[in-house]
Length: 140
Image 1 (cartoon, one colour):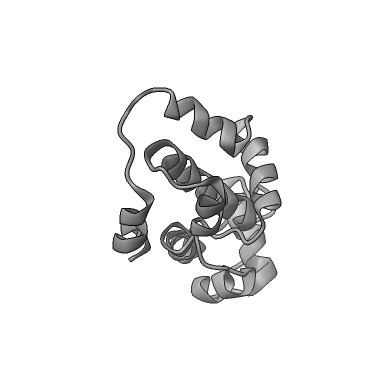
Image 2: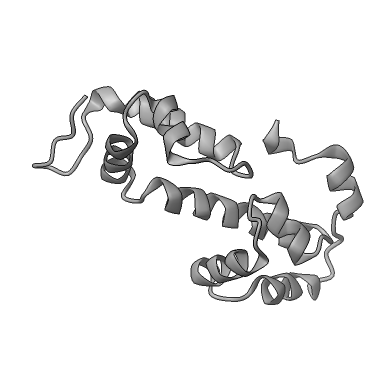
């Protein structure tokens, strides 16, 4: 399992392992996923995993995970009546400041402005108590 530096792509024998790590990020995005654990799932060293992941998907594992978290936050802000702080913690951020900065970088507006935009639409929203009681379906 070596990276082919000439064409910038990971070898085909690494792809199933990278997919396994990416699937883990998709499923458990709200958990603190460190590069060491993702590399272990892929069965390679940490730095080899980061290089192969970037060569294959064009983005680092941490950037991919951040995008996944922000996508899920967008869904929650649009469809529920949860506060921005509750959404921040549900998608795996421990700091509201870090969450807000990353959200603004990727979406272009603050989480509260994004939520307010959809609140004006008049579409019924899922009560937050229901989400907390039932849990998030994609976290199982």
